[in-house]
Image (cartoon, rainbow, N blue to C red; front, side, top):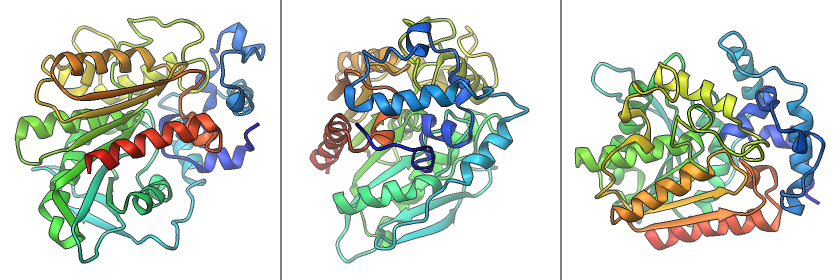
Length: 353
């Protein structure tokens, strides 16, 4: 079984599910179906069942998300941010924001060196309402060391205080800064990839679209890890009861998307520009790697997005992992299924680079 405890779990912070747990708001997932709530974890990979049980136990004690409790959730999550690794350099920078918008904080991981190396522009998860770039730095340090690349992660503004129009521009500002300052930080401009987990996957997908449309920054890969792509999931489109029962659920999803969009998730008036799955034209996008667990709330929307990319002529790799729930690779990192999941992601970057 996976060695797992609450503090270890919470310290992993950054992605949607983990930010939720770290913030003490796992109650957002308290609507798990009776089969799951009664500890029937037969659909969960055996190595992940201990972690899944702890998540469900914690979910039964929480109170869910609301505007009134969000700040306290963020503060609790911030208390679990881990120190940076000592052997991979990290530099915080303030970079110019889009016209009329504030400057943006980015963290440059593993920058410098004599030879130009590939780079990843990273956008963190947190359901659009939680998480931080700083909280993901240790995870990104380990990735940058293994891939021998530079990673720039963006501290984009969160919802509901900032709607999608602001956070999307924050992330594009980070990408543009990376491209324009490639020589200074040791980056090969022809080998820039995008990476985002969960809500960070929203942003990575939207960045790929923006990069295509604006024609300023070439992208070699968009790596979307259990990405949050469609506001209609769990709002106007129902899912089977065992999907999304562990971790990020339909109610949480509705709150996150509504906060991000500034209007009710799933409604007919939702602007396509804020939702990757609502973008009509996916032609000309960079190659994609999409991975998700079969029990994740996002599994169907991720499969559909991959199908649309393929139909649009975009080289796309899709990995769906049986028995895996949202964020399983972080909470059960030592499980064989998590190691295979991570290895597939790293292989996709190596091929792109």
